[in-house]
Image (tube, rainbow, N blue to C red; front, side, top):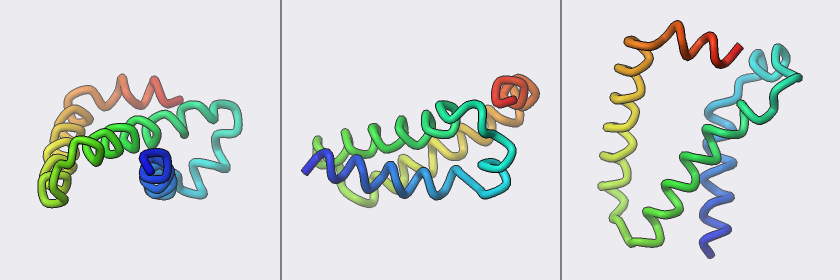
Length: 84
């Protein structure tokens, strides 16, 4: 069941993080396209194992999203350089 949960979240995040424009531009580094969805899917699958309630997962995703946004504002140029 944990593998099914991981695959569900992985496919969901893969759909969210990959746009057709990014896939057309990047044919050289598939690992960068697959790393973020895999990490987020692993975290959410782990939270499913430890029986964290659904509302806490949403709150955690919002907090992590805000933290990521603030990190991007601070280190945006370095992140863009790493992704290129």
